[in-house]
Each structure stands twice: as C-alpha cells, then as structure tokens.
Image (tube, rainbow, N blue to C red):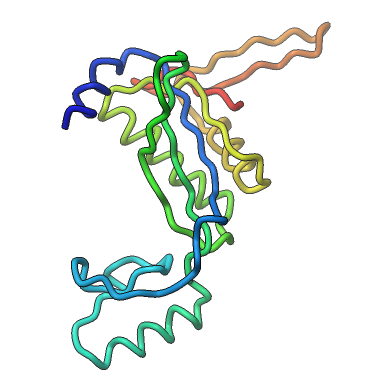
Length: 176
C-alpha cells in the first residue's frame, strides 16, 4: 500500500512507458491453479480454462495445445520516472505466445494510455519497446490515433516532421 501512496505523490511527473518481451525466464508449461480454479500457462482467459469437473482437464489441455496457446513469452510493462533516483515499476505482465499482432499490442497500449493512466492521473511522456517489428508497428498505431490535439513541428527545409498525438488528461505521447 505504501508503494501506491508513494506513486501517487509523483503523478505530476512525466512517465516513460516501456515494454519488453522476456523469453529466457519462461519454461512453457501448463499447471492447475487451486487458487484460480483453472489451468494456467496459456494465453486463453481464465474463464476458458476453468475446471468444473475432472473430465474438463484433458479437454481444456487438448484445446490449449490445438490452438497453440501455450505461453512462451511475457510482455512486461514498465513505468519509469525519468529521474535517476526513481527505480522503474513493473505495472503489468501480459502472457503471450510470441504471435501477437501489432493491433493486439496497440489495443493493450491504448487501454494503458486511455483508461489506466488517465484514471491514475499519470502523464505518459513516451512509449518505447525492445524493437520488434510488431511492437514498433503498435507504437505507430498509437501515434496515428486521432485526437483533438496534436503537437506538430514541420520544417520542410530541414526535413523535420514532428507530429505526436495529445491524449486528454495524458499529454503528448512520443515514441522512443
């Protein structure tokens, strides 16, 4: 709880939202979670892997395998205040199988930017990623989102076209 209070004290700072995919730490496998009552280790929702009775186990596991829905990557969303004394904060771990499209990634970005960040009153300065093509394209989708305001600096003599959306309650979002 103290971390949330600590974070709220600094919501006026501009935040960098970064994503990284981690594979080295994962061993793809399926397990049953007693706490959740479902099979975990897949990209399917908990509702789709819920175990109601013993016979559900093999049916759900076969469904996960048929759909090639076993998690082998985790996308990590990190908030960072661009000051040296502040450590990055992991805000989400999103399981995936490495086959996410730019549209799927952009939808998660939009949810973080438009819903979560605005609810927490966090101003996001930029979004960055580990450079995969899908994540770069997802950033382009975010930057091409229609908004009421944009930051535009165009200088044809210097071949500069600086154009970024300004989201309500968030401020401009830049790509790094």
